[in-house]
Amino acid sequence: VKQMSVGVMHAAFLTEDGQVYCLGRNSYGECGVDPSVQNMASSCRRVSFPKHCQPVLRVECGKSHTVAVGAEGQCLSWGDDSKIQLGLGDTRSAVGEERPRTGSRGFLNMRQTGEAMAPGSAFRGDGTGSRAASTSQKNYKDFESHQQSKPVFMMDIPLESDRQVHGIPYPPPSDLKCGDDFTLMLVRDSPDWYPPEEESERLFCCGENGKGQCGRSMQQQQQTFAACRLPKNSKIQGFSCGSDHCLAVLRRVGAKKQELWCWGSNACGQAGGNTNGAVCPAARLRLPKGVKVEAAWCGFTSSGVVCSETSRASDAGET
Image (tube, rainbow, N blue to C red; front, side, top):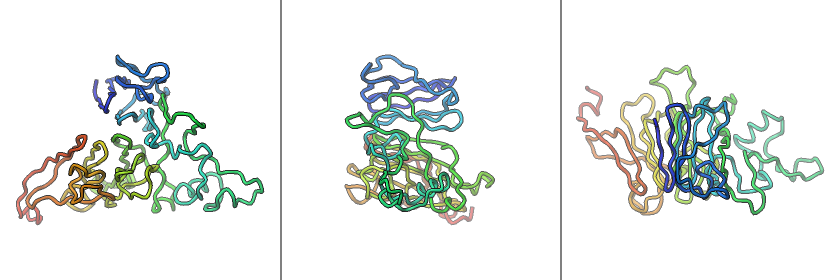
């Protein structure tokens, strides 16, 4: 076993040859088997993936869902999707996407199909009043459980406005983490020909957002993939997820100092803010003078940070 991840009541193990084994509760298919057949994996069970996705490179567990990265950078997920945490799109409606096709999804649809942006299904002028086709990877029928018992490909990350002009998709994620009911994904934002010191990255999140877990806004209870509101042109040095909060250590391009950013629930002070409610959007946590953040980790409702001492001279760039 070269990597493992432990959720609330299930765990996943990644072997040296790229196989994934799951163990524990399987009420939502999080162990990769139909829960109506087996609702508990009492021994390690191998998860079946499409052939071109093997060997698997990474696996992570949430509360009741599991995500993995395939050999060619494919992102797959399975388990509970009731909070749209599997990254399959907005699967809460069985009739497809009815909102106006605007933003990055509308732009990509226009490039791929030639369909104009903005007008809703009722104003398409075809006389049929047909609804827009669903943009989700999966659709659930009425009274069907929102869950997947086999690995399913996640949706492509929607382009932000500054990338829409060129239509250049994001590369495969370099890392991913899971909270209870949400998923975080780290992707490179800068062109691949940039030197390492000028590379920048973005964090994207989907799933439950009732306590600000997605780090963008609290306008939606759940949200599909969208970028966390962190400084642009920054390199993510590390990030971690708790039950419903997150920490990230980043360094802005051209700067030497690393910064600690927090968002999500702060009921137990785990996000470091001045409120016991929620921290959203993401906010920078100021550390005492002479302290440099090196790494950060999240527990269930706690946080830990590793810091080093710095002199005033080094902070000022004199040494």
